[in-house]
Amino acid sequence: MLATARLQLQHLPAHLTRDTWPGQLTILEEALSHLDALDAQWRQTQAQFPEGAGPGSEAYVDALDEHHAECWSYLDDWACHGRVILDIQAAARRAPSRPKRPQFPALTSRRSGHGARGW
Image 1 (cartoon, helix red, strand yellow):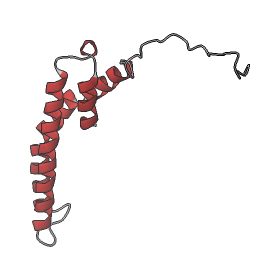
Image 2 (tube, rainbow, N blue to C red):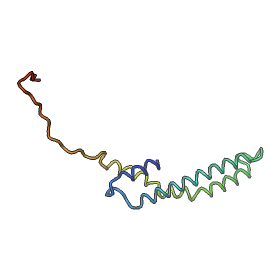
Image 3 (spheres, rainbow, N blue to C red):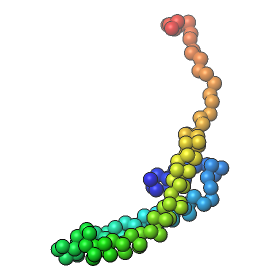
Image 4 (cartoon, rainbow, N blue to C red):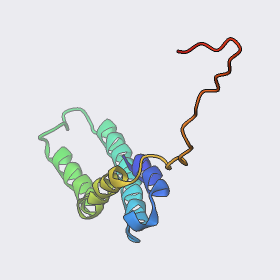
């Protein structure tokens, strides 16, 4: 979604965009990167738990609470700025889909008396 929004933004006419959109997309990209890193860290943490320290154990719950606490600010970034993806999509729908082609005069057939068919 982020990559699509970034690409759409590059192709939108300036009158359909807001100056804040590029910065908001950057915030979302950075937050997603941090969340991905925290997810990888959580998977490592889970793999290192001793047997019997699974979901419901005190060690697991404490580690999960810490993980969630580290994620909150990045999730908050998404809550605050995630709407920009929908706004860019809406602007892309309002934008002309392709440049207008110049209008050429209608072509007329060239019929001559030599072998022309009257189709």
